[in-house]
Length: 422
Image 1 (cartoon, one colour):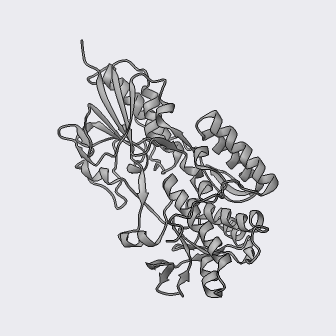
Image 2 (cartoon, rainbow, N blue to C red):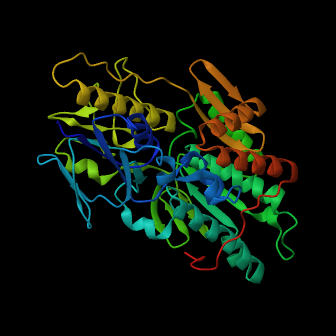
Image 3 (cartoon, helix red, strand yellow):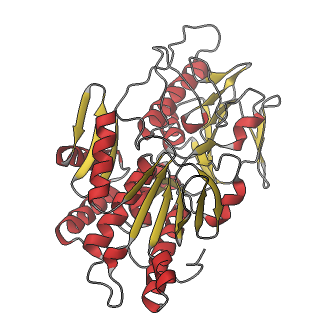
């Protein structure tokens, strides 16, 4: 009797989870899903955990729970540190994993463009731990601002500097502005919460670069109307404690410094023996495999892929899910019908992109369809609810959004004092 094929999936994000689900209970396959965390994270809503709109369990689900119905899928919490394509083996500090097929969907991490020492002075936003650190830093700063009588210190404590004008940076800025103007306005007695300063720094000439120019201009105007400062055309040249430095403008002093300016692929891509781009991504073949290793597939943020129609696949959750599902089907075909056969290349179905700017304001772009304002905001809410995994999560988020919209009172403002200063 022929042995089952061993499939190793590294990463339990959108791509890895979609791939595992596609191969669930398929005969002839033994699937191992390895992730450094024990949960799948709905990263598009991570900024809402950072800004106290949602609690961590609202946007995360246990990977074991999600795959408990799949008898052929084993979920392990481990950190893969090495990949050896020649002997078809990956390894961690604890154990080695042999595979017949490898799916690398390890995602991305914050990039400081070669200035990794800046990380100790800034906060990224890629995990639940990151979100908790951002929330702790921000609310801890407000608590200390109310205690101090030093006006300069209070000004710094009540300033948030966000580097990066993409969706993450813009959504954070809009959320902090709404939080100050609505939810926190009656919470402090010694502070004027309207003095909270939110600054977004973008090195380019406009924010939300992937969107159309008029949508970018609308987002900028909407943010500025809500009190957010948008600094364009200035590149950060240095980061010191509580300070962003520039060549051609005065420094920005802020207690809370958030880095949302760039990402780089998992360093595991550099162990595959193939060329990577500046962001550590690998250019994949039409079936998402890599050159000289037809048994290795890449999905999500680790790949730089243009599909069979010449469309550059973006680093978005829907794209990662589509890639993972495609790879699952591809492995099922290869394992059940080995040998020469027709390969249907991966084709990306563009489901558009969107960014929320604040309460009742968002921008949406889907091909030639563009929306902004309240209608786009409603579309953003509906789409994100649909993509959330699990009925409990959907219901919890829906109820909290409804309560926050009516009362302007986000309920996740509790934090611990541990390491609230950075």
